[in-house]
Image 1: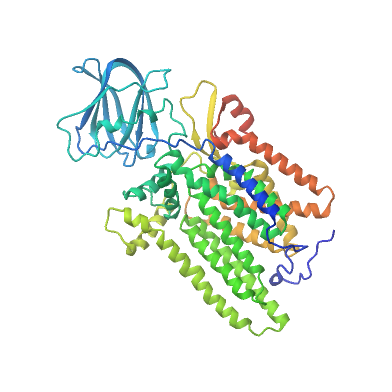
Image 2: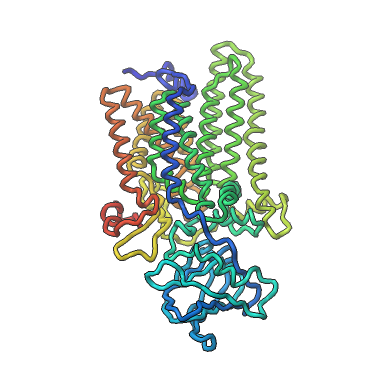
Length: 597
């Protein structure tokens, strides 16, 4: 089949036709069936074994050095390990002593509470025979939610018969030693991702909880909207692993129908909409972030919508009532641009891409008006530019500013919206000053090849020869094949002035190029996340190109999907934290030496 455009005389004539055969964008019953099927599959993978729905909720926060309490097992027991569950604050020191008779005490453990262990279980292994254990505060500033003593090989914690607080403890302390041992059913023998936080969850999930409890927010290096959304899950399911990950799972699942709608609108065929959404479901990077209390899955969902709305604006001619409809697409794009920026600053980079696409769209409208002798163009252009001031300045600023309400309410300082500019300056100074080396940091030029995935979680206290990991790594075929498809589509699509290719290219470069000059020197592979959906759409564009030119094109599509599905299964253990053999991890899953997990 011949695939030509009607006009190729210059760059201002981009996209005389975007698709060879325009089909209706309206959804048919088959679209609904397919999108429901893919959404259900995505939800099952996301929410299965997502995390425990229970966790300790009460705590002891000593207010004075020397505050202590004594635990009585009722009889002499063998203590081999202790698990401590800490909460916000997490600064301070506790001395734990053991005793056989309650008179003679011996040092058992010195615990330094740290901010990077909030809502996680800290395991220490040390054997001693004791009936009594005494906790004494040596430095305040921490919350101890629960503790569990264990005997090796027995998963249930040692039964505590009595907890006695010292008579001279501070009256201003929150809780008592009783709260440290009142939820023993939640104390695990082995810490795991299912019962605690990992990687950046200690920032994002924690801050979401602090917004709810009106506690001083610990993390202020990103705008608040993502954490505000995560807080919804915590309100629904309490401060539990399932609760703090729930809304990330919701957004990861909702990204599937959103992406289906985007592909349906772009390619205007059910086949390619299904193919795009299916590849998203098979994409491991998407799955990993759907199962973690991070804000990236939320921001990327917003960027997909904002660019698609701008694409639809460019597709909507102003004649026959289209002008009003086109303003609706601009409003949608501007709102989600503001929402994305209120999640993380790096999503704001896409604003340059939106501006470029807007210019191309306005040039197309000028050409159409010139050909149709439409003298209303100048009036509509002025109205459009005035609307853009509202949609891309006032609305985003309003969304961004409103997102700070929970943050301001939670701060102990007498802050208000007048301090908003100082917050932004603090954020900029922080990111500019991030220079501390990180073992899983990577440079921007390594991201497309996925040379250094981020190791989010590594299981501890495993049986010999076992391995357990969660890594931010994509489906190799979709990433590497997507890179080839992206470059090939640029070559083929640019020659034909294809508007889909133009949109994908502008969006990709607007997210990627700023990282080449960004002042932040320590960066990670997850900064490449906004480009992953664009890789998938590039793959779909190339598969469609093959199918339209060769009777074997559908076989290529089937093979690509089949291998992608196989690789999802292959890497599934490190997407979801399954326990596998260390030998299999090293030989079969670590394809490159730089894949450190």
